[in-house]
Amino acid sequence: MTFNLKLTAAAIAILAALLPLTAAARTAADFFLDAPAALLPLLDRNTRLDMIDYHANGFQTPSKNLFNGQSRITSSDDCRIEVQLSRDAAMQIAVIPSKSDTIIAVIETVHTPVPDSRITLYDTAWKPLRRQPAMPDAKAFIEPARRAEAAAMPMPPMCFVRADYNPATGLFTFRNSTVAYYAESDRPEILELMRGTVDMRYNGKRFVEASLNTER
Image (cartoon, rainbow, N blue to C red; front, side):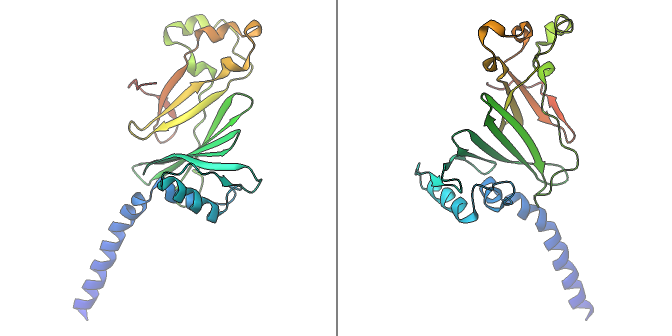
């Protein structure tokens, strides 16, 4: 009896150790397939399966979504999947390693009329993290050497930011699309002081600018 109990305890310990590895082995496509309907209302599970199959076999065939629009996967690897949901909306689902648990980053980008993104972080059970990082604002794009100059100027009333995740570097690239919103004749002067892109890392609480400069 004692021997059997020891075996049972050992088996439980092994299974417990393997659970994090099992979660980590899930790919971005797996999370796309299992994402809750509230997150992907345009695509039911069968349609997502078709989309994954088309992309895996090298087909560009779009799938009809629930609004009779066309959706397709534009790129996919183990850590990130990019999906064109409709003509004006796209989504990235990225698998981000974390000390405590894998984090799922969902980047939703719409054209309003210029590209603008939002990022929501989830755990592997699709529960939103309690603390969500804020997107970078206009001040984050000011050239560091010109921030004193910018302090005396009004910020643009609206700021549009497009986000992408790079699994190779673990960085989020934020692209300033604000300039495209304004006609040349009415662009705020401060736009001249703003960078086109900023690379940031999620530090477990917020996005912080990375010292590593990746290819833009």
